[in-house]
Image (cartoon, rainbow, N blue to C red; front, side):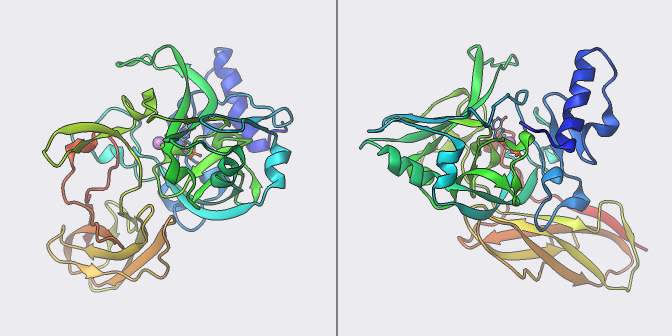
Length: 376
Ligand SMILES: Nc1nc2c(c(=O)[nH]1)N[C@H]1C(S)=C(S)[C@@H](COP(=O)(O)O)O[C@H]1N2
Ligand SMILES: [Mo]
């Protein structure tokens, strides 16, 4: 596969690391925030969040090294609880009806740096999120071809990347990255298998030649380097949705049980002004940012300048499910400290909580976090 210049820049320093040379941080991230050098995990800088995220500015979250998947010999295998096992080449997929959808992906650990006390995992700020136009085929169309048998429960998407997790609790040896999606979500319109990102070939770091995009769900469901799909007749209780990427849910009787993470929670972030900025008092300042709510559309964004005591409603020009919207509010600051807070409510009436819910472990981070600045 031909590597773009950018992919080369990402690959060359790895060879340098292997040769015992100093890693070249300057070219490691292309203006991205390096959260981990190997495997490469990159955060989008604040100033690049909004609209359509350029491919080279889209956050990267990878658990293992990028696997070598040759697009020429690539096959997507579909098997398990189906009438007809499929082996599809990229050409086979491209001959099917293609769809393009704008979808925001957020890592379930995005904003983790705001957890007190600090939680383990990558210390993302707010830039573990991005919005792109994905082109591919609907997973539902593929499942129709394979003729899913009655009693199917999960559609397991398996990536070609592999490794052993050695931290406690460890994985059972080397495992692939995978995720089981309930059949209904697998068949939903917003679930695609994509080979294009923003009208360009899908970059290697984002899963080329083929990745899943599970609209409205946290990023871990959007399996990259997808080569195999297994339909199961039981929930897929794998490493990645039990020991990892799971949260505590309470039964109506209050019994805590672990469940896999699914849909993105409502969230608003302030992108301007920034922490510790100094603005002029008595002069209007535009407070702006982004809001998204997973499978729901954003209904309302409210802004507080006094740490959450009083709220004003922001303007949100476009509100569609699955994608973020930009919002803004003109505000006249009085002299003194400002504690800006943004709060999103979705079409289902869900609002961001003031306080962190510990049942969410170190994921799904959308409690209110003030941005402190001063008006002089
Ligand atoms: N095969 C594979 N797919 C994967 C991952 C991975 O490590 N391997 N990481 C997941 C996680 S946790 C996230 S948040 C998204 C990130 O997608 P991106 O790197 O294109 O932003 O990919 C998901 N798909
Ligand atoms: Mo993630």
